[in-house]
Image 1 (cartoon, rainbow, N blue to C red):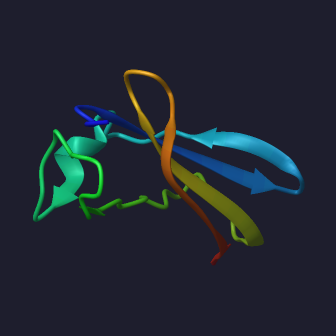
Image 2 (tube, rainbow, N blue to C red; image 1 turned 30 degrees about the vertical axis):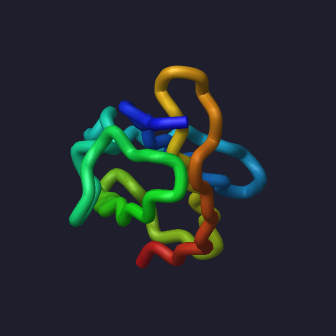
Length: 88
């Protein structure tokens, strides 16, 4: 099906506790590179996400951040991945 709107979500897992990481961009379609919404089934799109690391975040190793893009119309997960970060 076509996707007209996508919602990005980031969750940081610190010491086994999941914390929603607030993202400034609420509409993922605004951060697509070389493509735009609506996306049709089979389209390939690149999403650009910048995660600011503020002074409020302490130095810590082994933070696992999971990012997902969901269809805003039905909450279907369209893409997801996780990455382990060290903040210093």
